Length: 357
Ligand code: SF4
Image (cartoon, rainbow, N blue to C red):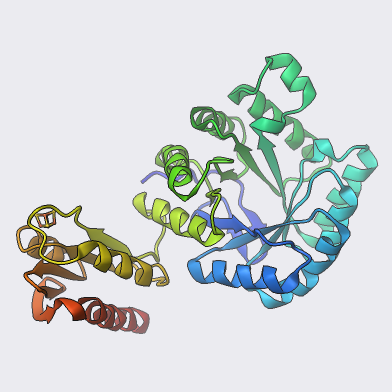
């Protein structure tokens, strides 16, 4: 799998985005940032799911001030999402945020941009430029008539130019559109136009179902070209679902080292057990693990034993029971009612072995 490595490495808290580093998974809180309890609780759930960077809205003074308290109780870098108001950016930086998302061209007077850049430089904080097809600058809409991939890249270059003029290069760029082909084209052109790391996302992509498909199509196409240094799946759903989808997507392209894989069959008339239930329960259990374990759950003895043998642990259904395989060996028969529990026990043993080595 090719992974574009010639990007500038940019430090965000204790992580580095870009360069030869793994693609980083991130999400955004849905809580009011000033509500520290709710925000911390959501971030801790995101961390448990595998989120590596989290963004919060900073739309008022209370939100900016809450950053200090939130930071004390979480373990991953925190990003402040700011629109227009440079004072909120300064306050967020003062309160210890690890990165800000702000478009320098939207801040206003040069002194304001300079103040933000100076504060970021002093604290070693990067800036993400977030280009969005839905909010392109007036001069670009006048030039192109409507949002296009070229207009998005030009917008990114416009904001990059402002920061580079101030000798600031800790930059990450996103070019989000809800139109998937346009987003793909914009990221592809951006990857050729500059070497700052790219934050991938398909904006306003929809619900868990449609948004997963849309994001996977767009972000998957880009990852397959080796483009992308950090990923955020945007869903109208619990943000934990965004992390699950992102990790699954990275796994497809071999871009994540610590994620389990579940192989489960689509079922057919040969099915001998309640496979949907078993597969869903096992998937939920695996989603919490950070181990590259391969588990197969197959409905019957036709393809089941073959697939189960390829996995670290697996079952093949039989009438009212399942054959349990471990590293290719059938280890025992288990009654259907015990299948999930027995599989979980075996998974735990493999995880323990993995963690010992
Ligand atoms: Fe059908 Fe068995 Fe294949 Fe599942 S493993 S799809 S039940 S033949």
